Length: 181
Image (tube, rainbow, N blue to C red; front, side):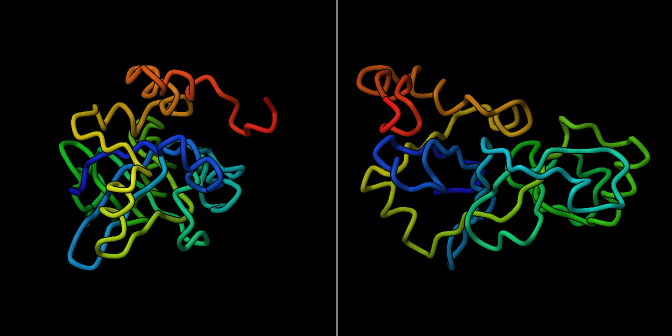
């Protein structure tokens, strides 16, 4: 597992409310574990709901079940946001948050250049590899992560399963809650 990979939840984890139909961007992987953000599940909050200093409203996504009281962000403008950590290609994680607020209020950051998350997804050292081996995740190495991460991503899980085809095509058309079938 490497940072910059994308994970698509297998349909078999449908009973896991957090990760059902999730698409996760891996932001960090090291000797202690893995950190990622669910990129396709909008929360009921926006930046102005949580940070009154924002003059412009940005959506906030549910990043995962860990530290849901903290706000995280990924972006593609490291030249503007100091102290960013490179994930892959043109995608960065974190940086100077006070500067982010100022840049957004000055209209120097566009909505397709940054994405906010409440919480993150975390796995201990071998946990994620075990979940991949147990077929809880579809590992995608060669996806266009910039496009997936910063554009409208609500339907990306379904679109990926349709591309894979076979039995996945059936799952892509099933209701999110099978009891509603």
